[in-house]
Image (cartoon, rainbow, N blue to C red):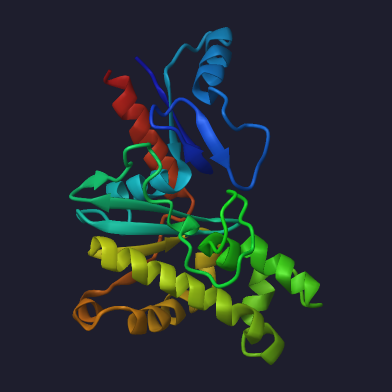
Length: 244
């Protein structure tokens, strides 16, 4: 029997049937999204069970399947784009938690200030370091509202003043996850990760926040699969679902 795997950019409830909250989109919360898709597939004469998963978790599954983390049992993937997602794999298994929401590192409160995040919390890494929020802050400061342009001009004092707290927050978040789970590898994915030199800049900033025993083993890489990692991860969900 065929099945369909779907990556969702937000919080998914434990049963993987309902979207709990989307941070950058609205009007899809608390609906049985999987059931609605199944009904549409049935109406199109393509009956198949639908399995939902957080999109960053899908990216982690894809990286473990055929990306930078192939062969790794413990690793973390950070998806850097309009928001910040994360997928964590420990002991060869994706961490999902008691309520299906483990690994949402973008919503760790590691930023200074009390700015409200799209999830409803404050002080979150996503609110401080995701491309959407950086670009909005840039426009307010009279700078180009495009992360690619800002990164190319990052040595200019006004741009550096904007990017510095964002990069510091990102480094704190990665360091915190590293200390909690002790991964073999941390992978950066998403549109922001393609900025030339971001990995080296991030690694340099993460290391001082790590306890000294962690520093020699810390490895940070850029995904070679890019957005395809999430597609491979969703495919693996579908393959697993087709077995049941």
